[in-house]
Image (cartoon, rainbow, N blue to C red; front, top):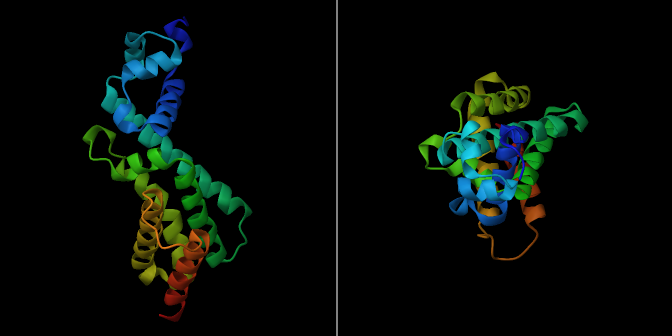
Length: 188
């Protein structure tokens, strides 16, 4: 059995997120994380104070990884604002589909200890709002940002919860929705 010193907070949080993806957030327990790490549960308390603190750490890691997905998308996107927005929106959807349960935890949790840091969420959207401002003007950037995020998050949540049941390509529907949204702001 590994010594507690061989376990670190990052490993614990990554293991918790993997367990959430595999079994669901409802099934997450400190004992289950300890079992997965082949350590005793009390060893976890050196790194996380409670299940709620662990869930909060998973939320924060999930948001950090979403930031990283945005950065990676922007690194390869063309310089046009519309292309950069499309890259971010696609990266958002791809990230959510790759991490559905962690995504849902990060954006829908009712557990107060697991709620995401408001400042971190603001950091997530400021770069998107700047790009929106390039596309639609500074004065319209906040409503455009809110509409874009609502569209993407709503689409993703419906998709993750298997609510699109009428057939057709979800990829094509996503692209058409994003294009129609952006074209609406072009003409306004």
